[in-house]
Each structure stands twice: as C-alpha cells, then as structure tokens.
Length: 266
Image (cartoon, rainbow, N blue to C red; front, side, top):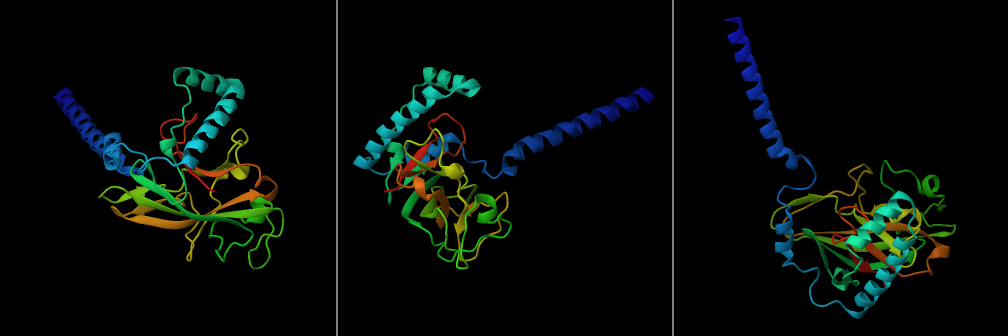
C-alpha cells in the first residue's frame, strides 16, 4: 500500500513538472523583449523580400564597394583565435556587401520588422539644450568631455546629432531594443572602430527617459513610427578622416553577415 501511495505521489509530481514545463516553453518567447511573431518568414513578408524601396543610388553603390574593400582588409589582418575564426568564415562565405542594404539620408532601409531612416544630421559643439538623463555618468567623468554651463563642449570633442525615424512594419505592436543595434562608424577606420565604440551616448528628448539597461527599448504600435535625436561623440581630430555612417546590426554578430544594414551620412 505504501509503495502504491509513493508511486502515485511520484506520478503526480512528474505530471505537474510536465505541465509547468509545457507552459514555460510555450510562453518563454513572450518573456523576452522580442515578440514571438517575429519569425524570419514574417520578416520577409512585411518587406516583400526587399531591403529598400527602389534601386540603390550612386552614393550607396560606391559606399558598398569601399566598405567591402575596407572590411576585407580588416579581416585579412585579424590575428589570434578571432582572426582564425573570421578567416574560416570568409572561406565558407566570402564577404560581399550588397548595395541594396545601403541607403542615403532620407531613404528607408528595412531591418527585420523595422525600417530606419536618417532625416538629418549635424556636427556641433552645442548639445541643443538636451539634458543628460538621470542615471547616466557625466560626459566629463566617462569621456573627458568638458562643457560650459549651457552644455556646450569646450575641448577637442564634438557631438554628432542624428535625427532618425524607426517605423514598425507590422500591424501588431512591437517592443524592441530599437536603438541598441545602431553604431556610428567611419569608413576606413573599422579596424579600430570609432572612438567610444560608436555607441549612442544619449537621446535628445524634451523629457529625458531614465538611463537604465533598457534605455534603448521602444514600444511602437503597428504601422506607426518613433522619431528621436541620437547623440554620438567624436574627437575633432578624427572628424575629417573618413565618411561617417550608421551601421545597423540587430544580431550583434561578426563578421559582417546578412543582418547588417548601413545608412551613409553625407
């Protein structure tokens, strides 16, 4: 009798664990910041397997040629374990940058269920009145940037202000780290990356959001868009040494693969 009771209890525990596991795995994809409807097939459907509207312009074509040449040089000079990894990847799938994945200012480029567009940009010493968000380390402490009381930079650095729009291509609401996959880079300097890793320093917002680990996350309703000013930093001495561009890499992987997109700043 005792054995039967123990067996029954054990069976109940097993069934309970199976039920919990099934519920967890069905709903696990909902726990992240990426909605579970974002399958590759749907990503392709919303854009009709295109990367942009129309044909690439001459700026895009020339940039694609130059970036491909620059990155091949970078990959050839990589050393160590990562260098070997890159070289093997290049043997399997030689680098080819598609000009359709490159756009100029004012044109949309499709990346998954989002599109990105740079509306305007400028290099300036003035922070245009945008406040540093709560929770962020000061620019002086983090980067050595000196500013006056109005926020204007007084030493050898400049802000690069990029007015950008991200659009949700789906009918459903999407929650993503929309801005976290963007980097500001310079053509020909990929081997050392742009100073400060090219990451967004902070957003130019009338009411700044708190600077937390979810700082770059946005919820965008279906078929709607979010427009924002992205603030980057660069050393003045480097500003004239190469074409600036925005690199979009939603997977965060290297070397360059099919997920990459680029917007040329000119």
